[in-house]
Length: 142
Length: 432
Image (tube, rainbow over all chains, first blue to last red):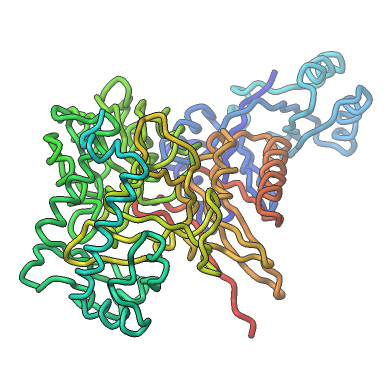
């Protein structure tokens, strides 16, 4: 039910982001979505891409600190209010969202997120019949 | 167990008797040195005023500046044709300094190093690889001659070229290696990259580490990584080089060879002796050197004498591991801080790597310290990283009494230290 997210620990220094992107380019990894926050202390660059496990190996071999984690990705109709509906399902059961980012893909709104309770989140997704995305489909949609 | 049992096992009274005899002979020799002759005249001291070890305190200190001021041969106590070797410091802070050796001095230097290496179990038949720089740097030739004196096959691999260094270790079957601690960590990293397991693929059993202050945690980590026993070595070019003080197999303090040196520990500010067992600046007098004796030389190294007897049976005093240099001391908001205090804390966190950098800044006349430290295994868990940062900050504050800004950085982002590690960057501007 989850997809792989590649997280890269980037130094807050000009050129480090480019280095990561160049490596992924050379390895023909396709980026689907990515996000970076502007905290002063440490930068975590989170990426949804094709072949995340191979992408991880590529970065690791280049000496870059990265890891792969499991996140949820759900697909929503592209109309007002759908994100609110989805998030409400989690809030009602007391699930906290650790982080979330969203993007449009193939006419659908995609929410990528991690919660503080993976098991409960799975239950809610099944119970509320939320449209979750499998990794292989994500790449096909892109 | 002892290479020189007759001196290594001397009792305290016998050590002191030998020291006084050698001190008197040294002072007589000093009267041939233009520098000391003038020094003694100016202070109104005559050689016959020194009748006991306590009388040594009548003699003023010798400093690195004295060595610079009388560069190159002003401290020589023998005619220049008796000198067979000179070593010179890098002179990064101005005029270099020069240390001179007669043939006797070189022999005795090699004997001291051989004694140290024998003490940690090395014998003829061992293969000793030295990753020190050769040439003017005394860690090269110093260990070379000492290791050869012991009869070991000695590989002068010299500094740098880590892959070649590792190839020598595996090809020659190196059993003992001399490396500075930060370089030992680097060797392990490169071995990992080359898929070499030091325990399985090498015969390494003994590591000699020195020249750079390090903590016991760091030593234990190096031992674990490389599958060796690591012994701390202390030396300095002004005192020959390596072979001044060395750990025995107890790994608890470094025996300083008191048949070569008289040890004092003084307060670096008042220059008065500190009470027994307290930290201060190490002051050494050479008593077994011909070419260039040094009386009460201020080493700038901070340490203390460990109290009590060593189970190894040697009565030569033990120095605690170096606490840094009196000139490395940082003063922040009026608090004295040594980099080693910070290192000791950082090394207790298994999440952190070996590399760290301390940066001092002063914004609006307010001193601030930033500690950057490499994270070993990155995890995309913001809460975990935040808690780790908080915990490091708290422990540092408990130790140094001011709150530093702790920054976790990716592995490999701090400059790799192949030489003496630069751990402190002081970017503070003088406001006046």
